[in-house]
Image (cartoon, rainbow, N blue to C red; front, side, top):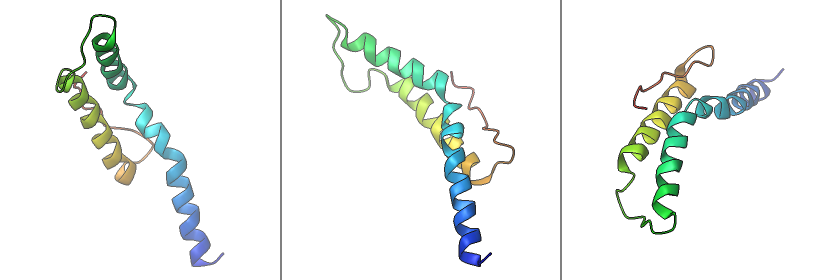
Length: 83
């Protein structure tokens, strides 16, 4: 096996694991989605920063997932505890 093949094998392996890391942010994504949906319901008005708290929780979770994606073992994603 050439060095180039080994590198691409590792890259493919990491890319396959990426969705699993982001899946750990499901509760945060659902909370943000509910906030946006409620804001756009009939009579609702979506405006800047209306769902900022939920968005920040989702962003923090994604950031933690990316850190883990780059360095964690066993597919464990550190949970931010912000939900």
